[in-house]
Image (cartoon, rainbow, N blue to C red; front, side):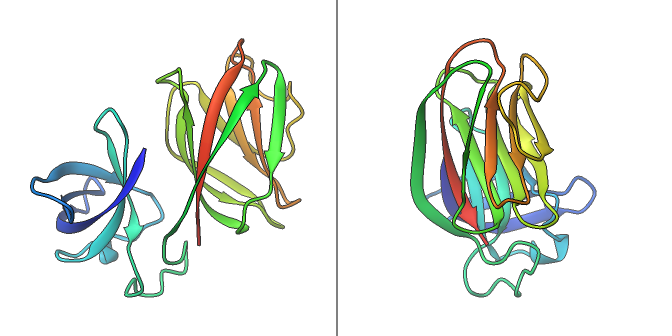
Length: 186
């Protein structure tokens, strides 16, 4: 996965998708999905946006990029942490947790050996927690609350934000997984 800057060419309010021109090269990305909480009014032609690119050519518009983002209070100006953390072993029926640098933002997850375990999640790990799946593989689900290893659906990888300020990852896939994550804080 890679985050790039691009410029909005067109926006469709009907489908909540954009066509964008990557700033680093020629070509265009057509009909890119836009995260649900990004208002269409921010996606005017000529506006710079942050775009998440997947290796299989999928792209998702994360929101306006940079200081001139109309004070986007739902998620703030996007800032990539430039840190990709790998969890080398997450055995079946186990969970782990970590405390993100910001209590709310976006979490990007990728499993190195499965095309069905990936996600972009909007999270809020504070008093009223939120875990919302923006995009993800068919084996990923989200919830709120602490996870201990066997709390969620068997055969799934679960992501959860909790009011204790932590994000929990639970593996119930049936085998040990190697996953990595990156955070985009607000």
